Image (tube, rainbow, N blue to C red; front, side, top):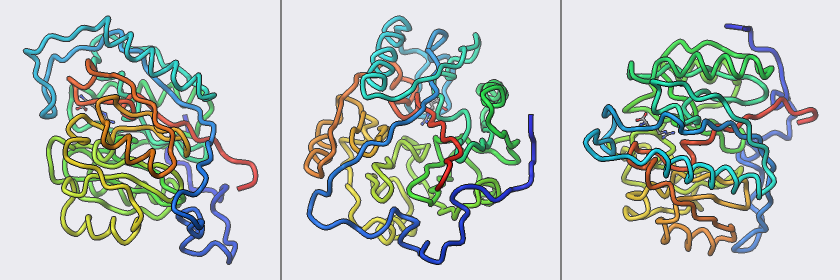
Length: 307
Ligand code: ARG
């Protein structure tokens, strides 16, 4: 396993003078109210919820006294997986491990960009052993794995939009991890302060729709972070409290199709108005642990040949 490898120039590290600030966010805004939406084919990593249950509580959604139907959770997860396959994406699977009921939430396993992976380090001991399992999988799959120095819960709190990294803090991922992220991936990192414990990971409060657009729940962020988001994304889709309360923002977009919780009907309509195709999936069992489609999905971004 390559640990602490020095940052080598890689794709996306070009010093092309045309690579101006607005290109960090996917270039100039196309004209028209609903620019054409283009799909990017993705490679996802998922973990079957074979051992899923709610036996501890590390976020306000988790009540260990609520019964969980693991068989139903598996069927719901299989529907999500099949949805990605039907959209033409590649889905890889990591073997679930007994005693790690939250391992189904693959997004937390690492952050993977340009063929490099920053391993996770979990805040809570109940999830600690997931990090080496994901790091070992990524190493075997040929990714250059960098060891975590600070608490970071992978793509739960770290989201790539265009060439910017949005990084949440406040509940899980530590602020110190944000600077390390910038070193590992050579990209600007925007720190966003989460303030509502129900939206404890960035991916429960904000969804990346494409290289320039996000959807988010303003009140999940501190006033300063709300102002940062308004400056960066004046055209963002603003979610309502009702959308967020069903984890509607925990959605996966390929630039054209947005896979989101079926219960988030208001957000789905808003996204359709903006030219996205929405696909609702019911992950009610996994929501008992505070997770939705995005939590179940880690994006594997390879080194791109000529970027
Ligand atoms: N029960 C898990 C936790 O609290 C849920 C993780 C959800 N994952 C996510 N990417 N938001 O850590």
